[in-house]
Amino acid sequence: MFERVVDMIAQQLPVKKETITPSTRLVEDLGADSANIMIMIMDLEGEFDIVVQDDVLSTIKTVGDIVGYLEEHIQQ
Picture 1 (cartoon, rainbow, N blue to C red):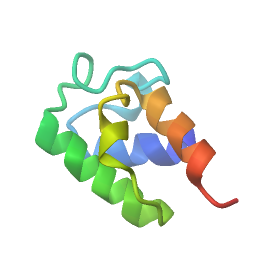
Picture 2 (cartoon, rainbow, N blue to C red):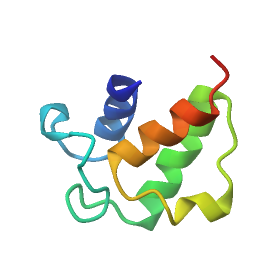
Picture 3 (cartoon, one colour):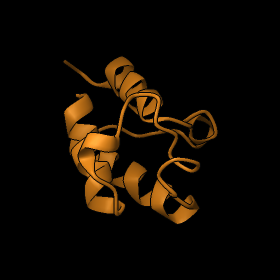
Picture 4 (spheres, rainbow, N blue to C red):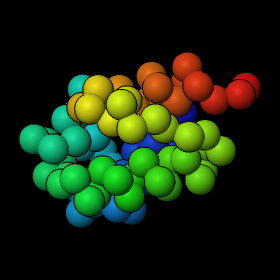
């Protein structure tokens, strides 16, 4: 799961995959802005066939937050 999320982030942002860890912060460390985050969320929704509620967006700060959310909400 982590690797899939990293691949998606690396496609969206100009960062090297090997620099991304679960504790990497989307805004502070990766330089993502609100538009980047919205596109990533839409991509994740499409990739994993889920819907991320708007109130969850404010809780997603790190790559690990994304992975944790996906692991909790994806039908295995």
